[in-house]
Structure formats: structure tokens, C-alpha cells
Image (tube, rainbow, N blue to C red; front, side, top):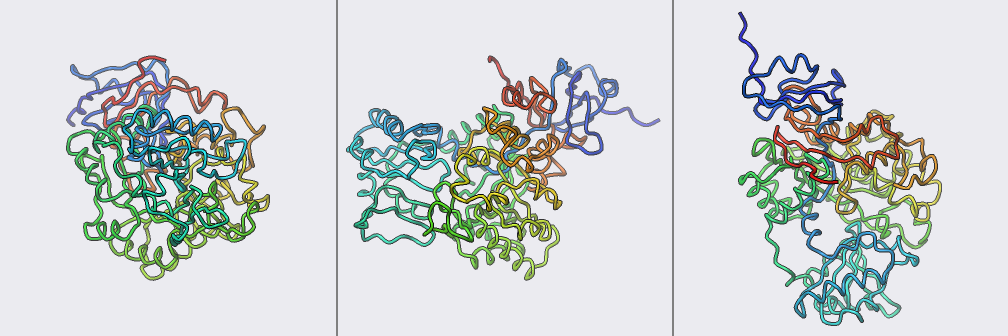
Length: 540
């Protein structure tokens, strides 16, 4: 007689389970053993695995989905941001200054004040700010404030002086210093010019790296995230991840992309990629390159000038030859490459660089990615599938940018902007993310944006270019199995399939069936990673 099946450690029944598994898309029970899914299917069959020590949970008819993965985020950066002045949602420059002044009052004189999250597009005056008022309000502290997209900073006069920046300072390649008529800096430093302000940030509050990471991981788990693709970190931060993993502190499966600067890339190539460390809690096997800047600060590289700035076509942060060269080395050494490209010129450059690299080093399953892929010329839409390149996109960027994107781009280019349906029609997958802390951590914001292309107030009626919407099934996949596929993790993660890690989320309502306007009212009740509950909602 065959041996009886092993008894499960945990069985959850009476649930509506969306598995993201084509073979068995719906289930009503799961059984867990050894941190893996032992069974996914009917309650009767699951309960047959019950033993004397099995823990039973009745889900009360609630919804379970696979653990969600944010396919493009800055996890360590989130932890840092949680300790800085939060400028998210400020409605005026005056409000920014008030928050900075309040923080400065708590710090010793001369201590840098750092913040993040301002967006001039949310103010009545949508021009990039000058630092005159900020400097007058903060004469005793260097102040450096990162724009919401991370592609520009606003610095006060004390910070600029501390950094040694003058009218004679040249713009670095791939960066721009905003200046007055006499050439003096007015406070905003775009893309690579942000590096000029590094000296002004020194001497700030001391942060414990592992506590920074722990706080970010806790925040991610709270919103139902069980995985994240961490974009562009230094070797030092990789060390923090490894120390945290060794200490059992990573309750988030983290796929790390190294920063694309020459020093970080040299370190990565010398060390080699690493996968599924600490029982599948850490991967270090990607390299994040930068094609251009951001649309909001007019650094996205466009084929034609900006509609609202005829003398400007954006910035190339890294040169095409560099992207191609790193891509070739990555193909030879087993690294994945992901290139930030927002503008149509940057997307074309990245595709061209990948095509050249793949011609030099033919590789069938490279899974190279373009991060954001926001504005794509119609001639380039089909090239993603043809080259096997994955467009890694962030649905909530569309709903954040839609109010002013037309001003930047004009009507014609909007047809190739945030074009999810056009890309999906070619056969590619679209792993979805938030780019947090650029956007909110909550992945259901991106789920909602993907299916309706509206903001939280149901604007605009019918959706913004609604022909580009995703279905709910696609939106769920974009946060589960597609990120896993985009990170070479799909045999371990991304769907509720027997044998995979037991990563799942319990929700208080069915996001696949409720009215769209109710999706963002959904609460994450529990988050489970490897069969262990890492978050539970205790009060609403």
C-alpha cells in the first residue's frame, strides 16, 4: 500500500482563493507544511491532510490571493524616508517650508534637514521652485529636499554653500542645475546634478541600517506585500540585506538590483549573482541602469522637445554605449539588466542597446527589463516582445501623472503613454509596481489604477485613455506571477500552487468582484510568508 500523505501543519478552509495558477484558478482551501504549499484545492481534500497537530483556520468566506510583489520599489529608501520630513501631498511651497521649519526646530544648529515627496505639479504655481523663501526660513541648517520622483532635489542657500556650488560649477553629464539669469544656482538640481549636493547631506541624523530596513519591511508586510524588487542599491546596502537575512529579519522576499554606477557594477561582476539565499528571502542578481530622468522634472529623454518646453528634450543619464556594454557583460555572467527608461527616446535607446548586446551574446532566456516604459513610440511597441524584453511598469504612475502629462507630451505622444493594453496585445507580461516611496506602498492602489485608469475620486469618468485598461485577472497577475516571472522566481513564487512557498494574503473583501470604487477600501487582514503570519490587522 502507498504511504499515507504527510499531515499538514496548517490548513485554511472556507476561503475564496484566487491562485494565479492557470491549471487551477480557484480554490477553497490550502494546506501548508514546511513553509510550502502542500495542497491547494477543495476543503474535503485539504481536511484529509489533517493530523493531531494540524492548526485549522476557518477564513469565514473571505478572500485569499497570492502574496503580492512590488516589481519596482526602493525598500531601503522607504526606510530612510520614514525618518525624514514627509512632503508627500503638500499643496503649496509654503506648506513644504512649514514642514521643514518644524523639523529644523527639533535639530541642533547646523544639522542637515532632509526630506522627500514634494511635487510642484500639485501646487497652484506648477513651476519648479526657487530657494529664496526656503533659504530665508532656514538660515541655520543645510536643507536638501528630494522631489517625489527621486529625480531632482531642492536645496537651500546653506546647503549649496556647504557643497561648494557656485555659478562657475558646470552641469554634470546627464544632469542640470537650474540657474538665474546670472548663472547662479536657484536651488533645483536635476538627475545627475543631484550628486553635487552629497556633501551638504553629511552630518545628518545617524541611522542604524538594519533598523532602517526592518521598518521598511514591516511597512511592506502591512500592505500585503510578500516580495519586492529592490531597485539600484550599493554593495553596502547589500551587506545590510545579507546581515538581516542571516538574522531572520527578512519577512519579505527581496530581489535586489545593483546600482548601475561603475563601482557597484564592478563589485557585482567580481562577486557574481546570488539566488534564493536564506530560504528564498534574498536574491542579488540584477543590475539597474538609467536611460533618462523623469517626466515631472522634464528629465525624461524624448525624441521631440517637450510640448511645454520647446528648448528641452530631456536628459540621458547614462550613455547608450555604457548600457550596451554592461548588458553584454551581464549576458556573459548571468546577471539580469533592468534599464530605467521613461521617455520615448530613452526607451528606443534601451531597446537598441539590448538588441546589440543580444546579437553579440545570443541568450534565449535573459528576461532583460525596461523599468517604467512610460512613453513608447508606436514603432517600438512590438520590439519588446520581439526581443524578449519585459516592460516593468507602475500603474499608479499613470493616475498620478495624468493631470499634467498632456502638457508635457501633447496629444499625439499620449497614445503611446502608459500603454498597457497595447503592450499586452503583443504577448509580453507587465510586472506591476509602485516605485515606492515615489508612490504609496499600498499595492491595491496600482491594482485599482490598472483596471479603471482613474484616481481614488473616480476621475476621469470612464478612465484616462480607457482602451489601455487591464482586466482584473491581468491586474492580479501583474502583482503576483508576472513579477515572479520577471525575477526568475516563478517556480518558487507568484501563484498558490502546491510545492511553492506558502506566501499569501487574506483580504476582507473580494477585489476580483467588488465594485471598482470599493477596491481601495479593502483591508489586508493577514500577510503570510513561508507559512508564517508576519502581519495581522488588529484594529480598523
